[in-house]
Amino acid sequence: MHGGVTRRALGALGLACAATAFAASAFAQEAPVRVRGTIEHVDGQTLMVKARDGKDVTLKLADNGPVVATVKAALSDIKPNSFVGVTALPQTDGSWRAVEVHIFPEAMRGTAEGDRAWDLQPKSTMTNAAVAETVKEVDGQTLTLKYKDGEKKITVPAGVPIVEVVPGEKGDIKSGAKIFIFAGTKQADGSLEAEIMLVGRGGVTPPM
Image 1 (cartoon, rainbow, N blue to C red):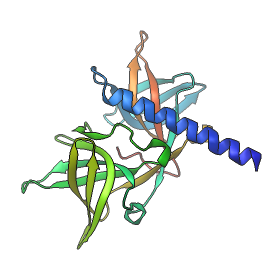
Image 2 (cartoon, rainbow, N blue to C red; image 1 turned 90 degrees about the horizontal axis):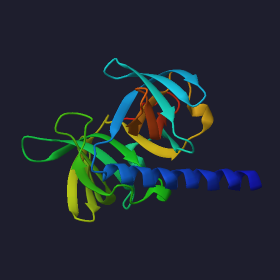
Image 3 (cartoon, rainbow, N blue to C red; image 1 turned 180 degrees about the vertical axis):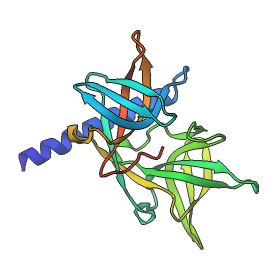
């Protein structure tokens, strides 16, 4: 029991640290370096990664840098007041359509809250906010997201990737795992130091 409590406490601490890192990077004046790819090799704190553009990237995990995992979730897991992040694309009729949704744990509520441009796809945005309302549609749901400075309605079609953010474990960092480096800092040797890393668990690709 004590060990389980300790693991949960450490997990919550890691997620809280991740929330801080997310927020700091989201509002930094300089654009953070982001990497989406697959781990090819692990050597201690250094990872060799094949980025989605085909480039080889050397990543170094920052000392005590939080590692967060993503696991498969479903549209039914999104409830009123859930704190979520949604990447969306504008539609010709002025509406917004989700590309992916990630559900934050309570320890990360408020993480980088707001609506901003995102680099997953051209013209995409990222909205981190609480779900104020969910309305079932013929092909999915429409979420009304409320954040500090406003609200945004986004339709989430069936089949859109949905994941839940959970505490990461050392065993998650392995060859073949899909990762997303939210914020990286270029080093003198050309490598990147990862301030925060999300790794897919069980074959999941962090969809952000």
